[in-house]
Image 1 (spheres, rainbow, N blue to C red):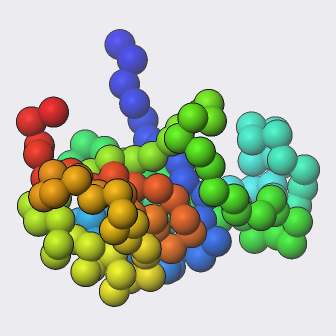
Image 2: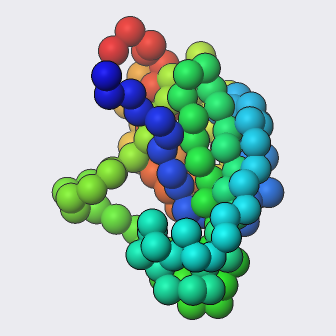
Length: 140
């Protein structure tokens, strides 16, 4: 049986991102993990020092792993096009888009107001620029 274990998201500040996902989207802290450099380097194909710390957050059966690499030579963040192969966004259902947008702003995110489709959907970015889709419909 194949089951999704978690989705990993690289962040620049674990505490800020943890607060964002807990306060904005209702995630609950599950546990923290500091990974030794040798296994992290091998598994992730990252040259040591890796400096990997992770925070695991849960929302129902979904687990979000926030990853932080405490080292000086990480790749810089960049905006990705929806047409670029790979993961494009994470999507979450919220009861009210306007309220959710206010909370996104209050916790360091960005609301892409030009993407709003009435009271159905809007795109936002977390504090590191990760694209998130907020939907009011939960039956999709």
